[in-house]
Amino acid sequence: MLSLKKLIGTAAVLGLIGGIAFGVHQVSFAQVKKQILGESGQTQQLQGTHREKAEEIVAKQLGMDVAQVKQLMATYQVKPGKLAIAGVIAKLSRQPLDQVLQTMKQKQNWKEVLSVYHLDRRAVVQELHKWFPRAHAAKWLKNHPAVAFEILADYLGRTPAEIQQALYHSRLGLPGAVKAAVLSKASGKSYEEVLKLKEEKKSWKEVEQVLQIDQAKLKAEYKKLKSVFRKEIKQWRQQWEKNPA
Image (cartoon, rainbow, N blue to C red; front, side, top):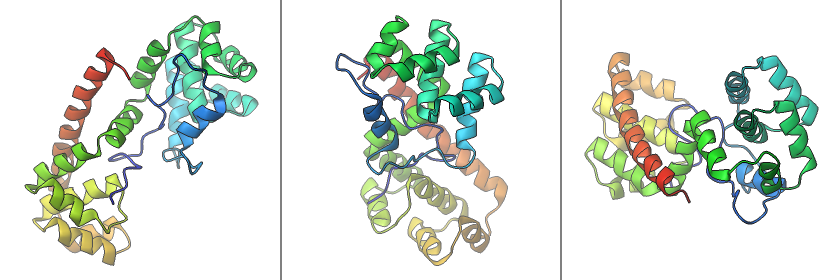
């Protein structure tokens, strides 16, 4: 089956938006970590430069130097997930990030942390959405896999069932499924032909070389498909903010 562990294009910075229960029940840091990392304990979206991206976003939002943020992460030994939440709490409460991280270290659950700074969990989650919109999109895609199939099918002039069948034995994640769709449209080859080439070749670059695709056309097709995804996600986000889960 199609794996929906990754988001289209560049991997999202964090996979935590909306998945953290700040509600009535107390949620331990360990439980939050499990939600962020998943059952396997491996982050899906903190590879390469994405950890640095998280640090940059937090630093920019709080008017700090990236070096300062890096130092605080090292001092309190926090992962980007906790850093993001601490950054939002610091901004909404107008308190130093250092102080918020210290509070988080002392408390055992998010309810206590938010209580210290007199914050509502909804405000924190909505602010996180603004800081890390791609992570918010990641949650949407995971919760609505059928929509991803429908968008790809409509884009290719196929049925969702055909797209799912084509990807059934593929190891491609959602980014790969999207990449194959764009290459199919730009080259005029069938979706199945592109997937077969991917199985035979080691990289997408090699597949592109075999298909001899014009880069300008490829870029245009990416833009077209991405706009459809963004439109769907935006509509869902507006609905979520009116009635958050």
